[in-house]
Image 1 (tube, rainbow, N blue to C red):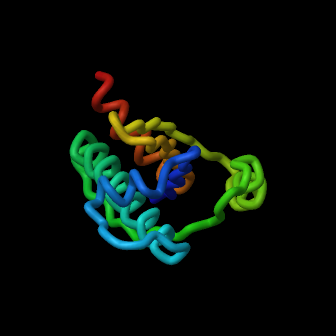
Image 2: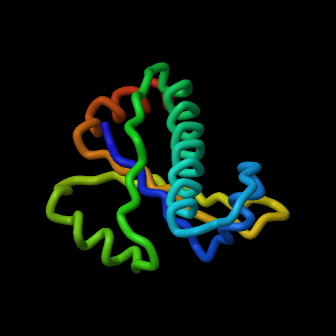
Image 3: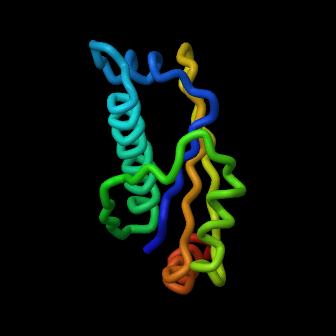
Length: 124
């Protein structure tokens, strides 16, 4: 089990809309829908790839927007009390010819022992 945090950096909503083939006016509601769609796609692709390598399956919940125009340190600080021992994996995405840039952080705590066993198998 774990959590994924997708952080967009100065990405263009018009570029995200174009990439997702959205036609129409972009208001705040559409911005949130676009963020949720991209988050679902990127997190799903990443976790599916990891699951295949570890010969396991993951389920994925619906994404939630934790904040807009907020410093990452504030998001981490707000959740730090929930995490005792955490492993984080950072993956940076940039989409060529689009002003879209984001970082995907995967956090896990409860699954560290199981993950270590599976990784040990791959390392041998």
